[in-house]
Image (cartoon, rainbow, N blue to C red; front, side, top):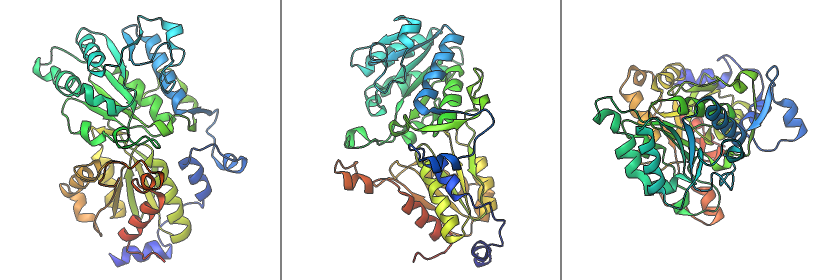
Length: 379
């Protein structure tokens, strides 16, 4: 164990180029200064789009491609969507394919699920996944189970999408992360995108999938901009559901996370390299179910340490499932330190700003967990 730590601290492990500023620019998709923008590497012919634009264009192109695709939910039509993800779709496709509903999640989720039984391909928007609790019977008992219970005769090609997890100052009832909830249900596919490439490629894949897909976006990421390559803007660009992405290669510790926390993890990795000469590998899960445990296990075999990061509660969470995937495979034999879990606090989300900030993982939390994993003491 200490030999491995020694390699990390003495720099014997292969060093990456000193791109901490670049990593920060990629990890922190806030409106950037000219200096940060200049540091961000540009793909040939790259475009810059927000997550909102990525989602909107994905839905638009899939509606254009297949006339069985339609959108349903509260304020998706006349108001262009509560978060403007469906902006312009009513004007382009009309009110038969962009359907406003009353405030009745159980009603429109049931209607959408039934229409999927009949061969349509609904994109059902929840204004927030906290409200999906009103419709959970349709998601878990109707959509998720019907293919199995019909002996494979009835497909359910539906996407349930909307913002998931904490936003800012919206209180306990509007701040829950449902990744682990829906990730535990057989029959569902569950996606948790991070950046614009994820949003566009995975939403298009979800709409084309013949299975029910829960698509967990993040409200705080909608307006964040990312550079994407030309291929991402192709109308047939999709990403495979169930395949994670290695965002940053490293040799000393593996950080596995999803959604907004991918950016925080990349910032933490930059700090670890710059201040501690610890080289972290950062994995963006992208999919919660199916979970790409193979990519995680291969990374752990390389780094011998694992840190999981999520905004959900610690009990029965995504991190706990990742731990089990390591314990149940040969990757367990490669661990040189206990797995570190960084999670949301085990409390209802506080409304007070200072308490809310403390309730979710921070860059400092991730750095501290990684240093514990490599047995480096904080100053």
